[in-house]
Image (tube, rainbow, N blue to C red; front, side):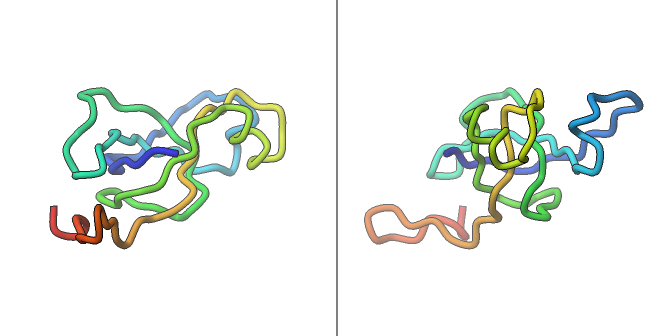
Amino acid sequence: MKIGRVVGTVVTPVQHPAYDGHKLLAVRPLDPDGSEASDRMFTAVDRAQAGVGDIVLLMAEGSSVRALVGEKAPIRCAVVGVIDEIALDGRVVFPGW
């Protein structure tokens, strides 16, 4: 599991049929303290009705994601939750980054 911030949506004119009916999100990975873990972004299938700006919980293990979607598909990452709060050592760090 990883955390990230949704930075946009992904629209594709042509895609694998496994993506039909799924919203695709552009996500930037975050460290638990809220700093960006990387300057890279990746695409994730939305399973939690997340939106731009949300801090999200990501399942990023390909076989687990494919089992979640329920089909053989070229899917590596899925948003599985929207995070309300993160506490480290008993101290709430999100919200408040």
